[in-house]
Amino acid sequence: MSDKFDVIVIGGGPGGYVAAIRCAQLGLNTACIEKRINKQDEPALGGTCLNVGCIPSKALLDSSWKYHETESALAEHGVKIKGADLDLDTMLQRKDTIVKNLTGGIAQLFKANKVTWLQGSGQLKAGKQVEFQPLDGGDAQTLQAESVILAAGSVPVDIPVAPVDQNLIVDSTGALEFPKVPKRLGVIGAGVIGLELGSVWNRLGSEVVVLEAVDTFLPMLDKQIAKETQKQMQKQGLDIRLGARVTGSETTKTKVKVTYSDGEGEHTESFDKLIVAVGRRPYTEGLLSADAGVSLDERNFIYVDSQCRTDVPGVYAIGDLVRGPALAHKAIEEGVMVAEVIMEEATQVNYDVIPGVIYTHPEVAWVGKSEEEVKESGEAYKTGVVPFAANGRAMAAGETGGMVKFVADEKTDRILGMHIVGPQASELIQQGAIAMEFGATAEDLQLMVFGHPSLSETVHEAALAVDYKAIHVAQRRRKK
Ligand code: FAD
Ligand code: NAD
Image (tube, rainbow, N blue to C red):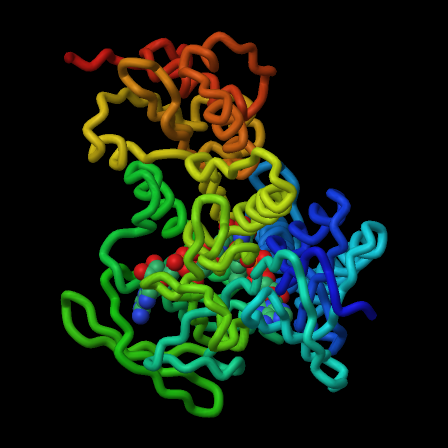
C-alpha cells in the first residue's frame, strides 16, 4: 500500500464516509481510516449513526410502534387482534440485519469509488502526517496526505452518579440491546435519546420514568410545540419528572436504585434497567498527537471556521467533533463541503437551515428560529398555527394530535422558522427547509396548491394562518 494520499479521512461515520466518497468523486486519491469493530466482531464503516445511533434506533422505533398499534391502536379502525405476541429476539435481529446491510453498503460504495478503507486507528501528527495503527495488530505506519479530514465523531457523556456498566446501567448503545423488556425502566435525561429510546421500551411494555435535571422540557424547541409534545409524551405513559437531579445510584444483582432531588426534596426509585442519556461529547482521545497543532475550543470541540478549516492549513474537522448540532445530516453536508473546499470550489453549508427531528410518536420537527428566539432578537414577527385536528387526512389516519406553526417576519413576510409536532413531522419539515433555502415568504406558500387530502395541507393552512386566512380553523385577528 502506498503511504501517500491526496486526502486521509479519520473516521468513517456519516461525516467521514461521505467526505471520502465526495473527495474520490472529485478525483482525489482518498483513504478513510476507521477503527470500529461491530457486534459481529467485524470491522465496520458507518460510524455511530449506522451502527448504534440513527438507524438501529429508528428500526426499533418503527417495530415498537407497529407492536403498540397492533396491541392498542388498531381496534379504533375496526381491526381487532387478540393476543399479539412480542418476539423481542426477532425485533432485535431485524434491527441488526438492517445495520449490517447498510454498513456493508458503505463498504461497497468505497470499492466502487476507489476509496481505500484502512481498518484501524489514525492519529494526526505535525505536517499532515497520520500514524495508522491497523486493527489486525500489524506494525504502525506513517502516512502522508495533502489534506486531512478529522471525522472521529462523539461518545456519550458519563456522569459519576450513574456509571455505565452496560448491564443494569446502560448508555444508548446498551439500550438498543435489552434481552427482555424491563418492567421498570429509568432514563436520565429527557433529551432526544431519552425520549426516543424511552418511547421504544414504553411501547413494548416498560413502565418508564424519565429524570431530567432542567426545569424546562426540551428547551431548544418553540415553547408552544414543547408544551404540546410534553402533553403527548405524558399521555403515552412516559412519566417525565423535570427539575430532577440524580444524586446517586446503587446496583444490586438485578436492580438499580436511583436517588434524585427536586424542589420537594430527596427521592428514591428502583428500576430493572437505567439508561443514561445526558448528551454526547466530541471524541478526541488518541486522535491528535501533542505536536498536531490543532486547537480545541472551550467545550473541547475541535476549533474550525465556517468552512471547517482547523488552525492547521490543510487539516479540516467535521461532524460531531465540531460546533453546531450533533446530527448526521449536518456531518454529511460538512463532509461534502470540505471535499469541495479542498478542490477550491465555492460552497457553504447553510447553518441557519438545519432541520431537527425527534422520532417519537407523534414526531417533533423544527427548522429555523422559534417564536421565542425571534422575540428575543427584537424583530417584529407574526405566527400561524394550525392543529392537525383540522385536517381530513389526519382524521382518516387517526393522527390528529399536534400542530404546524410558522414564524414569519412581520415586515418582509419571510419565513423565519417552522415547527411541527404531529404525524410525519420528519417529512413535512423539509417543506419548511426548502422554502427557507429559497428565501420564501408566507405568501409564497399561501399561493401554492397542495394535494387534497394530505397532511401537507396543514402546512398550507399554517402559512395561511400567518395572515389570518386559514379556512379550516376559526381565526380572530389580534388587535395591533
Ligand atoms: P460518528 O458517526 O460518531 O463516526 C465517527 C467514527 O470515527 C466512529 O465510527 C469511530 O469509530 C471513528 N473513529 C473515532 N476516532 C478514530 C480514530 N482515531 N481512528 C479511526 N477511527 C476513529 N442524528 C441524526 O441526524 N438523526 C438521528 O435520528 C439520530 N439518531 C441518533 C440516535 C442515537 C442513539 C445516537 C447515539 C445518535 C443519533 N444521532 C442522530 C446522532 C448521529 O449519530 C451523529 O450526529 C453522527 O453519527 C455524527 O457523525 P460523525 O461522522 O461526525 O461521527
Ligand atoms: P441531549 O442533549 O439531547 O439531552 C440530554 C438531556 O439530559 C438534556 O435535557 C439535559 O438537560 C439532561 N441532563 C444532563 N445532565 C443531566 C443529569 N445529570 N441528570 C438529569 N438530566 C441531565 O442529549 P442526548 O439525548 O444524550 O443525545 C445526544 C445527541 O445525539 C443529541 O443532542 C442529538 O444531537 C443526537 N441525537 C439526535 C437524534 C435525532 O436527530 N433524532 C436522536 C438521538 C440523538
